[in-house]
Amino acid sequence: PPVSASATGTGGSKMLSVTLKSMAPESSHKPGVTRKLPGSMTVLHVKRMMQQLYKLDISKQHLLAKGADQKDVWDATPLDDDLRQISHYLTEEDNIEIIMQEVDDAVQGREQDEKERKQREAEATQSRGHSGMESAKAGEVAGAKAAATAAAAAGSNF
Image (cartoon, rainbow, N blue to C red; front, side):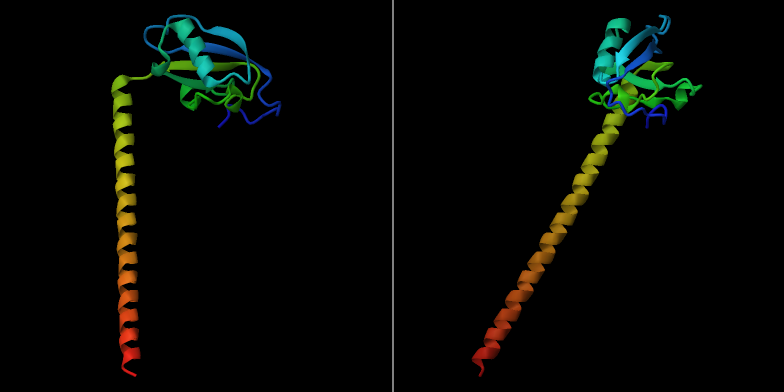
C-alpha cells in the first residue's frame, strides 16, 4: 500500500523529496540525508544509495517508507520488492522518509527455513493429490476394461 492515497498519476516520473535514514546499529548515529529522487527509481537503486551512505550490504537491508502523516515507524510501508519503482510505494512528493533497518541473520534464517518447510508441504500435498488422481484414473480404466470384457462376453453368448 502506498504511503498516501493522494496519487497524482504522473507514472513515476515526478521528483520526490526523500530523507534517507539508517536505524542499523552501526550507522544510526549518522544524520539523515535528503535527496530529490525520481519516482521511477527502483527500490534496488535506493538500497545501493543506502549502501554507499551507511556502508550496510544490500542483502542485509530492509527499507521502510514513512510519510509525514505517519508518526511511527510501525506504520511505515515496507519496500519489499527490489524491482518496483519507489513511486509504487510513495505518492506524496515531500516529507517522505525512507528508513533502513538491518536484517537480523538469525531471524532471516528462521524465515527462510519456514518458507522452505511450507514449500515442501505444498509439494507433498500436490504430490498426494496427483497420485490420488492417478489411482482414480486407473480405477476408471479397470472399470471400463471390465465393462468391455463383460459386454464382449455377453455379445458372444447370443
